[in-house]
Length: 185
Ligand SMILES: Cc1cc2nc3c(=O)[nH]c(=O)nc-3n(C[C@H](O)[C@H](O)[C@H](O)COP(=O)(O)O)c2cc1C
Image (cartoon, rainbow, N blue to C red; front, side, top):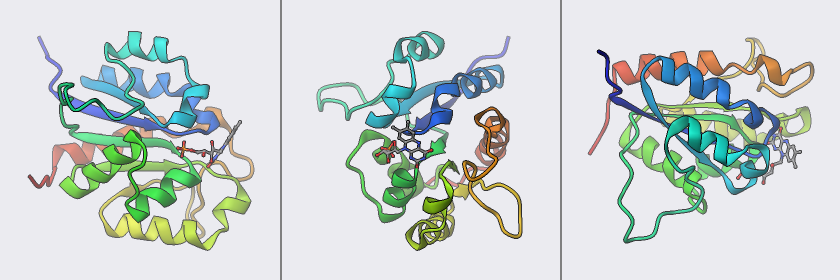
């Protein structure tokens, strides 16, 4: 019988696709990932934490743990989906004022695969700091998944439908990347 051996941390932000994250959890569990959900504080109003805890068997990790709490296992991959404008920019700058940002920052530093799917509207997508953030995150090895090519643009801009959010593509990338990891200790 197969056993779960890989840990996936799923960071969700304060944006509408977060209410559909159960789709990603189901897919990941079918592929034998053990899943932990790490919502930003603003993501909490988009999810039912009790349902996510029942699905994953783990408390959703909103705040930093107490120093006396056991350290959760280190993830083998991190999917940040949807990634808000705020979280994309803060991640690029290395800010860790939420637990979710801390998970992203550590994973990047350890060379653990991080897949990020920004979901922002046109005015935010047009901002220069956002474009710089994506370039910086890619420079650090983060896989930033955008929609289309020439020009690639974030999901969430005009004609985006939450129902078309690319959960499976994000997981495919995490799967592939975790199969050829390059972690640092
Ligand atoms: C109903 C609602 C929808 C929102 N949709 C988005 C969105 O699609 N993309 C985005 O970047 N921010 C969106 N926001 C704003 C973010 O929730 C806000 O910037 C928040 O500070 C993000 O914090 P986080 O990155 O820690 O999750 C939305 C807020 C609300 C209340």
